[in-house]
Picture 1 (tube, helix red, strand yellow):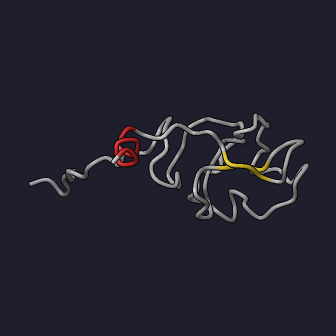
Picture 2 (picture 1 turned 90 degrees about the vertical axis):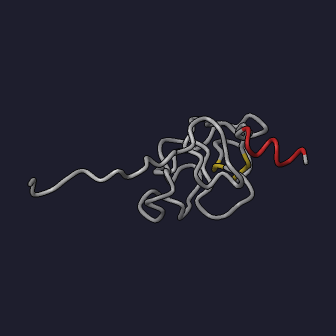
Picture 3 (picture 1 turned 180 degrees about the horizontal axis):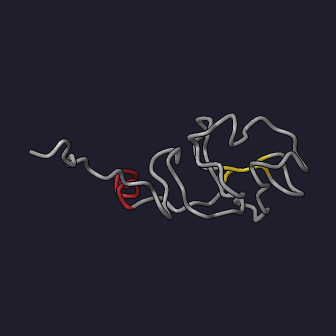
Length: 103
């Protein structure tokens, strides 16, 4: 027989444009805060110096300046350019969570 065979491993579903729960797995492209401030790039230390870098949080999906939740906040957020130090983002909830919230 063959030396190896492919295993039937189920594909993980990574959140796309919507957020589950606290949004720790959110990987969409919203890059503005609730008040409309543009997000600072996670890899940048300007204008805000911080430790939430892709290097320090390698599995948190800290790409570009997209809203993320690397540290257990209540929702995806980002450091802002020209606004408060950081702010939560207006990321749409996935349908599953919308239903749960209604109950």
